[in-house]
Image 1 (tube, one colour):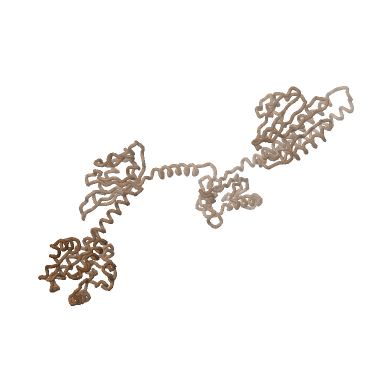
Image 2 (spheres, one colour):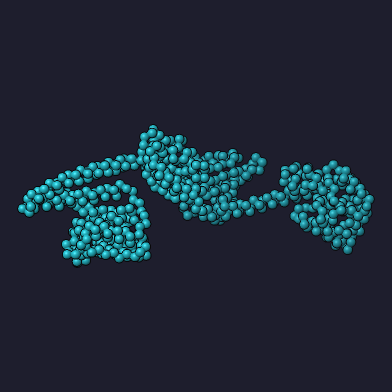
Amino acid sequence: MVENTPLSDLLEAGTEPSAVEESAMIYPLVADSGNRRVLREWITNHDSHRLADTETPVTECEFDLCIVDGDALEQNVDRLRECKDAASPILLPVLLLLPEKRTEIIDIDGGAVADNVFATTIDEIVSLPIRQAELQWRIKALLRLRVQSLGLQMRTNTLELFQQAVENSGNAVYITDTDGTIKYVNPAFEEITGYSASDVIGQTPRMLNSGEMPDSFFDELWETISGGENWRGEIVDRKKSGELYYATQTVAPILDGDEIRAFVAVQTDITERKRREETLGRRTQAIENAPIGVTITDPDREDNPLIYVNEGFESITGYTAAESTGRNCRFPQGENTDPETVAEIRAAVDAEEPVAVELLNYRKDGTEFWNELTIAPVRDDDGNVVNFVGFQQDVTDRKQREKQLEVLGRVLRHNLRNEMNVIQGWAETLKTELGDEIEGPEQIIEKSEQLTELAEKERLITKVLTEPPEENDVELAPLLAHVKRTVSTASPDAEISIDCQEQTAVSVTQNFEQAIDELVTNAVVHNDAAVPTVSVTVTPTDDAVTIEVVDNGPPIPEMERSVLLGNAEQTSVYHGSGLGLWLVNLIVSRSGGRLEHEATGDGNRVRIVLPD
C-alpha cells in the first residue's frame, strides 16, 4: 500500500506517525563507491525504509531524507539547497557522512563556506566509518522531525483553509471562550446582525437577545454545550438596528481531549424563509377554508392526476382527499355530463390555456350537481406549465332557479299571447260592430299589442340573464346593414343611414345586434316627425370604437333615459316600462362598454363606447 505513497498522504489517511517514519524514501547521494554500496544494501534490506531511484537526478526525485558524503556535498550543494527550498517550510533533512579526521570541508575558506553550507543544507552529521546503530538512530531522529514538520504544515494548511472558509462563509460564525465572551466574529456575522467586530468582541451573545425566547430556552442550550454536546435549534435574535431576525443555530464545544476550550456558534439567517412560510401558511389556510373547491394537478405525471384537494372539494363532491388524489379530475363525470363541454376542457388543458365552464357532475353518492368549473395553468419562471389549479362551485340551486325562471317565463308568455289574442279578437269584433262610435276597441288593440311586445322583451332579457356572457369578434358593417334592412322593412317611411368603414370589428357578447336594433327601432317608433330619420355612425380610435345613433324625434323621457344609462331603480311607480332600453344597457355593459345620451335640440344622440 505504501510502496509509492508520499508520507503526507499517509498522514492525511490517519496512519500512525511511527509507521509513517518507517515508510520514508531515502536517497543515498554518496561519492565513495564503497560507502554507496553499503548504504544501498542496508536500505534495500531494511524492513521499513525505501530506496529512492538514484538514477533520477536529486532535484527531480521524490525522497524524504538524503544521505550525502563530503565529495558529493561539494558537487551537489546547490542542488540540495534547491530541493530544501522547494520543500520549505517542510523539513527535507540531509545527513552528512564525514570522516572523523577529515575536517578540511569545515575549514574551507576560513569556515565561511562551510558555515553557510551547514546552516542551510546539512541537518545532521555522522562520523565515518559507518556504524549502523548510530546511522539508524540519526535517520530515525531526522525522519521524526520530517514527519512532525509535515504534520505541522498539514495542520497549518487546514487552519488556513478553515479560516478562509469561515471568513467567506455566508453563515454568521462567532467563537466564545468558556465563559461565553465573544473572541471572534466573521464578516457574515457583521452583515447579518449589523454589529461590527469591534462592537461585539469582549461582549457575550446576550447582546443579540430579542426577548422573544424564554429563559428555559437558553438554560437548555447552556446545559447541552457545557456537557460537551452540540446544540441545534431555531432562535429569534435582534439586529443592531432593532429589527428581529430568525436563524437556525448550531453551538458546539471545541474540545482538547475531554476539556472544553471554547465554543463556536454558526447561524443561518432564515428570516425570508420564515416569512414565506408564514405567508404560505396563511394562503394554505385560506385555500383549505375556502367555501369553494380548490384542486391542483400535476401534468408531469401520467394522466395529469390530482395532487391536492381542499375541504371545499370534499364537501361538494363527497369524495375525500385520499379518494381523490392520484386520479384524473374527470372521475366526477357521469352519464349526463355533456361530452362537448368535456371536450372543451380537454382542448384548453392540452393548449395550456385557462377555461371556464358549467357541467353536470356526480357526487360520490350518485346525485347530480352543476359544477361551475374554472381551470388555469400555473407556470414557473421560465413559462413552463408545472400545475393546473381548478376551482369548483356548486351552482345547482342557481341552475334550477334559472330553469324554473325559463319555464315560468315561457308559460307566462305563452298564456299572455293566447289571452291577448283573445282580447284582440273581441276588440276587433267590437270595432267592427260599433264602428267609430267609441274609442275603446282601438285602445284595447293598442294596449294588447304593447303587452305582447313587452312579453317578447322580457323573453330576450331572460335569455341574456340566463346565458353566460360569451364575447365574439363582430364585424360592424354587415351587422348594421342587417339592422337597417330589418327596421326598414317594419317602417318603410323611415330614412336610415349607415356610416361605417369596412372591417371595423369589436369584441362583444352575443345578442349585441339586438341592442343596436332596439336603439334604431326605438328612434323610429317614437318619432313624431313627418319623416323619421336615423343615422348610425361608427368612429374607431386607438383605444375605443364609438357607435352613434342620432334621430330627429322628441327627447327621450327622463325616466327612459335613466333606464338607458342604468340609473333607474324599480319602484311602485316605475316597474315595467322601458324594458327595451334596459335590454340595451344590459347587453352593452356585458360587452365592457358604456352608454351616453345627449339631447341635440331636434332629436337625440345615443353613443355606445366599446373598448378596442
